[in-house]
Length: 303
Image (cartoon, rainbow, N blue to C red):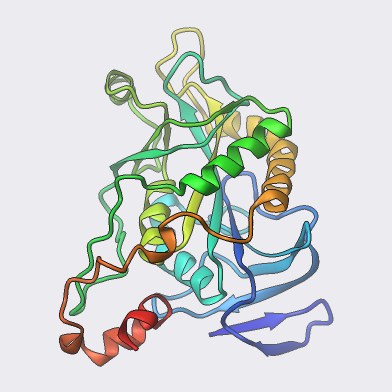
């Protein structure tokens, strides 16, 4: 269920679907989307609770876009406190088919420098406190996740970064830690020995849920620091991250506008049918309450 708020402060009922086909999730340092026009805020209610903040709907490069601040405006929510299920389910309820995520990451390799962008094509999950599935309560599903991000969206996003003159790394593994603490030196060395490229605290959970919701997912990993392993750089601090992010906020905004502009209307990937062979439970045995709760993502398979 969604309610909208326009600039005249009047609230009206909003249709909960087909309001946007592209979603943008902004992380640390990206709490709004420049260039959005004809904007209004949508308060979306989901079966999993409230999203991190109101979702801002608007037009960007001629397309309808839904923007959500992952940590809430003012950065109020820890990575482990984020209601990831509500965030992704809300996007699905609004009709979003593709999500572009922006997040801050630390570099684990010498040639991945602060200020550069990486588009991850793999994740390694080291979180331990999060629910990362919509399923359960009488319905079992196992989605394919060998390629956790959308190949088509990744290519568009990588080209957009290059077009905007930012150094882009078109693939790499993002290791997702629980946080909120940064890595220990021992952890950083292990991550480097495993040949991971960057470390962050959010994206893998979003990617898992987006796949279950049959939404394409791609991410801009904005490199802000060298974690704590580099002998010639001080250990990472929150202030250091924000300073680098603020310098690169304009780049991120330009990349997002270019990616939205060039994203094709048709999806050539398999993300939109991820559940076709993933629902294991005999659907006649699924409790009605579960069917209702997950209607936004399973309706076409149970009708």
